[in-house]
Image 1 (cartoon, rainbow, N blue to C red):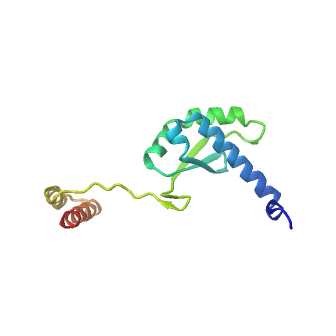
Image 2: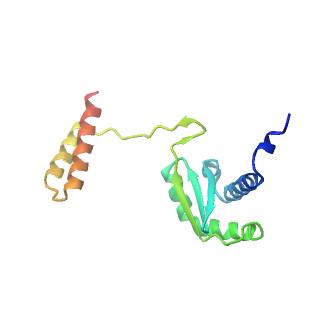
Image 3: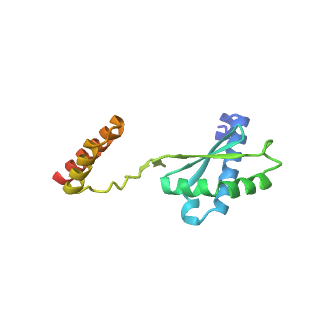
Amino acid sequence: MQKFCSYISVDLQKKAKLLHRLTLSIRTQLPEDLANHCWVAGVDNRTLTIITDDPNRASVIRFQQREILKQLNQELSLTVKEYLNQIKVKICNVINGVNHPTNAEILSKNSANLINQCAKNIKDLELQKAMQRLAKRGLKETEK
């Protein structure tokens, strides 16, 4: 019986190793609670794509983008042919098959009514409809 890796193309194996190496490098730069929730998804057109499971963590990565890129370019100058100049962060709610429920705030009936009243005075129809939907959701949450 052949080894599993013999079924995977050499180019794909190299790419997987590079992404793993980039992930490990980024994780050394980040705090532990953030590092365990970040994965490098790809490198394309001098842009590094990082996946995380939380919008707050994504913001931290965006703020640290320059430092991350600086270190990666120094560490991987021989491996990566072009210097990386940008980081794109994507948020994925499902990682390793586990759903991470969002913690939606419960809106009181009074707050829902206030939002609904404000919506009536907004001239931008798209914003008005969004606020009305928010108010309806708040009313539904309190009726449960």
